[in-house]
Length: 467
Image (cartoon, rainbow, N blue to C red; front, side):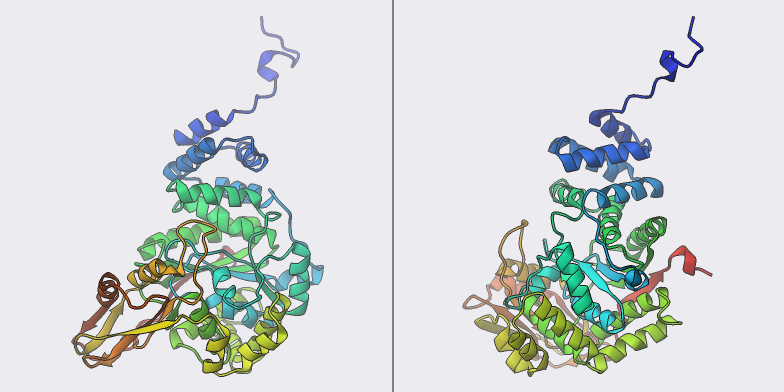
């Protein structure tokens, strides 16, 4: 007869499931409880879960998915696996950031962080390195001699006090569990899992103690998502989980079929970012920066509408205040003051001598006349990667001087023999294979010249902003 005094076997606390049991549970499509997710992340951080088990769990999540509640707990557990950044209380509503899922020629962060700082925001940007065909923000900034992306939490606070913004790498003190999962995702074909992407992005932003975040979710041939629909699914997950974490997250869906701006490659992109900070630069780049910045200022209550927020960002580019913040950030992160001044006040020709410069510059010409219909970003990035601008595995060195300049723009009419691209590289000449791949990236048509669509297509708003 069973005991009825509360001491029988049925009333004993349930024994925690083992890691293989948790993997089996998710593999079979069941929902993981909060403590089960926390227990798994704890094991990852402490090193008690084997790498093979981590890979198996990641694949189970990739195949079976997670609901918003599970993704929220995974995000919180990752964020709590390391140190939390601490800021003065008065900074609370001013703490903002932007994240991009990665594209070709995407140097937006280099311009937007100082522009937002010039608007009175505090921008503690924890950024990443490039892997595969996309360039990393940290790699671009390291093209500037002396720039240090390694900053402690205490140094980050000093940077925000002095310059209003910083762009740093993910240190071992911050979100260590995410670093472990990210490395294993990369070699287990689980990079494209929506809950894993969401938790990875938002855990890093949660430790920044942000009030507002805008995520640039790219779609198209050179993006992680080929279609706008796939990008929208991630955008909605980021916005939904962000709201549960107490962060106002908006997600912009932006096209990534053609390179952003005219330059691709680390040193060349820094130069183009400075042109933009001086009030110039390619119109498509300036438009995306002001739209993303305007969205943040509107969401954060610092502008009554998105358009007025965008106008505020534009003003910082035109009046030199964003450039001043950029220079302050360079100096605060290790760049010699004379070099920072020369970069931010010299002519383009003078700047080229200060940044890494490739020994060979080679132009390709159009084979016929026509209107520039398409310039495919992916093959261009792949050729640059093969020429040394990218890395195949984490930790590999790369060449900051390798890159390209587009000499024509989409919608422009060109004659046969027009130089359309200039490649900066270290060899004596481009191979026939590379020349062919580059030429195939350009599509000409017979239609009249036209104005291309802006890359900013859609903005997914947090629940609090939906009327």
